[in-house]
Image 1 (cartoon, rainbow, N blue to C red):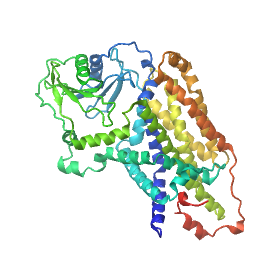
Image 2: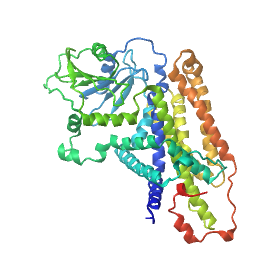
Image 3: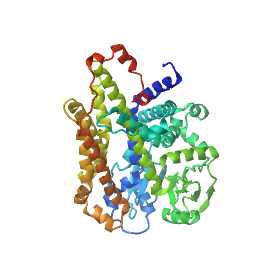
Image 4: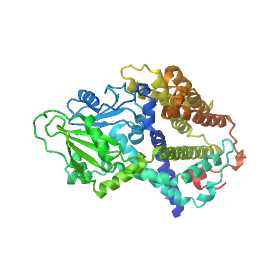
Length: 525
């Protein structure tokens, strides 16, 4: 621990951020792309691009979903929306993987699966590693809060540094100024995202209350938390299942707006109940109204009371994090602020590594940070390359290929691994930053062309003519990002300007050792 309070906070800021900087970069990049997860879903499912207009067939979709999950007690169907023209079906059978499928809104047929934008959403909250990943992401979020709070304390010149940027080629100050600028620009957003991200999964991290109060029964816990009630099973099959199409039409009229999803509960029992939850797109906390229908007759039973204040507060915090409100403008704001978070984390890691490498080299010692520097290249430059490669794999893999979604995910992991290996091999005798950034730029520039060659009816020109702005937006957005990565590749080719020192002026080894815990962000020019 250091001698003064600010020095103590500097030590905390450095190590709290460093320990999980790579994990946080993956979380932030995945979350940033997940701001447009439904738009990416749409782009990655060409079967949806030429749908004929007409009302959705919820009954046909339910029939398909029941065939896929015959033993599921509860089914969820999400009607088409402005962001997703498909019907999404969700079901869970005990002992089997969770089902999340896209269904054709006209006939309920299964649309060939793809990882879609949901891949980045899952990567964002559990690193595609299940329960272990959830705990790791939670730990990273807690350490990020510590790093942000301690960073505010140690930056006495925070507003002055916001207007300072010294982009010297390879200069330490350029990395540091970039870290300060993006950290201050998105500070309120980063604090909110870190805090709400931890709160969302709170029951997974702090399970003592559930274990003691509900004997570990999570279903009963959530039922009490949300204030919802469930019909008592009658243990006999239903005479029939009411038309979901008619219930959806009635719910839209009663709610005066869109329905978020239909829930079919106790589908194999005479107590079958169908609920329609309002979309609540203009509310941060999402829909509040929940209409209840008899599952056999389709008659309207009434409306559930809204959730209690505690759960509504939780929904509000969750809504702030998930950004399902406010339309495209708010999503773009979150996307841009999320991108500043990625830059903040990338520059922080680079500052830490480069500073210590130079300190060791200045002391005449052999640097032990070579592998760390190479892995830093693999994470920061490799993950954007892997993300773009996922879109390429979606178009290049045969559309009807069995296990296609799994192969898309495998392509992401394989490219990321190859990028990391390339960073290790090229770090000493090459420019891995230039190589990976340049490849990413090339793939982004060529994405609209590749899309036009593989799916002519979904090309940028065809989408503009059809006024399909969501589809056209993916291709169009790739171009400015391609320019950005091309710029990063260009500046990575410029020679590093290293300060030449007289070897006789090298600090003693003890000075280097003592400087290992110093914080780059508080050094002076």
